[in-house]
Length: 71
Image (cartoon, rainbow, N blue to C red; front, side, top):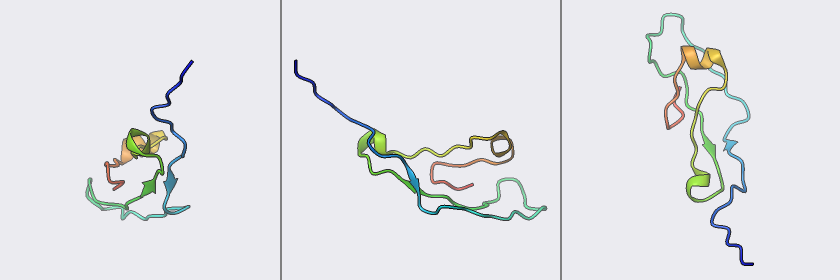
């Protein structure tokens, strides 16, 4: 039996900072930039691509995050 491993997800994504803290003015218009987060993944190819998203409902309903990590 010969097994070829075509790709493996060996590394987890790591944020460039341990914590991110931002303040938002109450009167900021919708769509205003709050901050930008950044992560890297040492895997190559598709396994190394970073996709940002919110995991809690408040984040999902009140904010958006783009492919560059801009909130």
